[in-house]
Image (cartoon, rainbow, N blue to C red; front, top):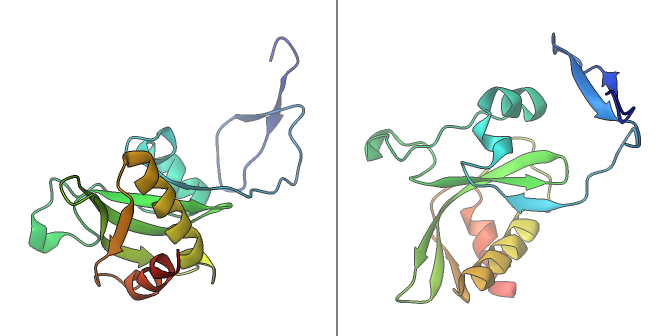
Length: 152
């Protein structure tokens, strides 16, 4: 703030001091997409994640399998300005595949969620050296995601 780059801002429902960069545009428009690690700073700070996106996240690696809701190592999917889905992924290095063990849409997920998620999963598979991406039938988004992956 001393250099004049930040100014006070307010966020509805927040009772604490926040700031924004003086050059930031309001309203802004988000256009990106990302699969987020449980250790990404956006996800790791659970209170902020809930306040900004209304998204409850819990890593389930320490939860007994019968009590897991979404899977072992679930990654939230950020599309534009919303958390729209979550996927449980596993790398099959021997088979050269990225396995989507489950895929769940959030209640307000937009119609293009499966299309965008399939593209992001293919990109992740390439980055990991796993050219094939396969979706298991678990989760309410799995069937549509499988169709979109087959098209790519």
